[in-house]
Image 1 (cartoon, rainbow, N blue to C red):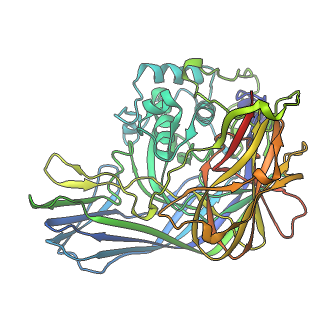
Image 2 (image 1 turned 90 degrees about the vertical axis):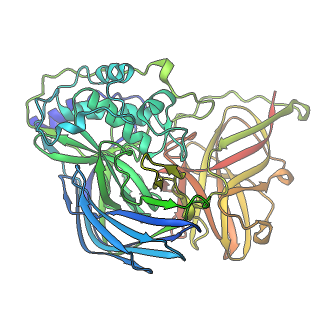
Image 3 (image 1 turned 120 degrees about the vertical axis):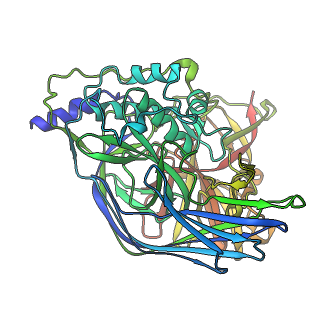
Length: 583
């Protein structure tokens, strides 16, 4: 009982109104056969080509464990030289070197991973602030160009967030909760450093990692950046009143590990709003920041003066889960950030029963992310509808989750070619990943919620889609949400769109469905878009991590065996509503 009371006091400081914190417990255990294939076509005039890889190794922590066996690298053209060494962070680097290469070089990296995630209550006695850390850990307190732990504004914010923290885990929760609420995920931000994220509230996985690391290091908590790969295998969490499906893109990812004196290094993923990492992660490389963790996937070359183009490059990842056991459940709490956050329970060994209940940190209004639309959670505003004549719908209206990378070839996505100080050219890996769901699988239907704060006469509904092939027809249906947070009363359906009317494109683009024949006018309130199809189309619908504009329960799906839309998804599909709004 005493430890239970400690847990309650420890977590209560994160606020309560509209909280989306879930305490999660259970575990995952999987056997994974993993393969990454890279194809590199050197440009004419290339004198030397160097491909670098970091060897994934075993890792053990209180929540995540990785065991790697049968690691191998195979090439279609044997390299002229091979180098192996360790960097100062302990990463084992393999460099393959070709002299005057020509023709396509294919590299296949394969391994077998036994990965597990266990989410039993963590027990820690780590105080805050920390005492002196060991010499081997101290480098991860340092500031860098990407992790501005010494910046005045970041130091002040970190001190504000942790002012009342008595334990390290309490300080970390406050920092991560602020980052989760502050940040909006974008696939290709203008910059990747912590200061950009702090000021703009935007970024991808690198930004989430750098900002969290900067705030933590600013108050003496060691954090290291981890690079690796996430796998797209989904997994379900029983949240009591339904199933929440969590899924990531298959591709490069950045997260963090935080050092505790009694637990060691513990992984966290702020971008995925998790105070743990799932076993769908392949851990590869660690360092101070993502500038330092750049060896895995690095391409370097020298070229003659007549050469003018970089190598052509493609990368694909495949993973087979030969054994996959998942048993996870979560309970929603009355504290936490406004956005979704999963955390295992934490028991502190020290007696904290008399600790005060912490106030929820305020956010400096000058540093809030500007948002022009959208509502958080299922707090739909109360509207007083009024009737408008046809003539009053005169203002063009576009609304939705509008931002996604159009027409990007994700297989060929790569960092820009840059010249190094030694004259060599290089291209680094990037973290542009294809976040999309295959939404035309037989027996399942997907729906996305949207909330209007004004009356709108709807003309078109656009979805960010990519056609791979198949045949058939597609349409969208508009449902009203009658208060249960699910699609309920159907209001209209679009015209049928034959699959041959959708162009083949390199990447994703808007596909508009015509609603005008339905003469649909929507009053302020909450609604749903559901995608329907016949035949066998092969279609992906792009999504954003987290909830960019809509409520946390605003993306759902059902199977042919479900009577209701009781299954929700942790991301938000990209969509747009077009029409005319009432003045």
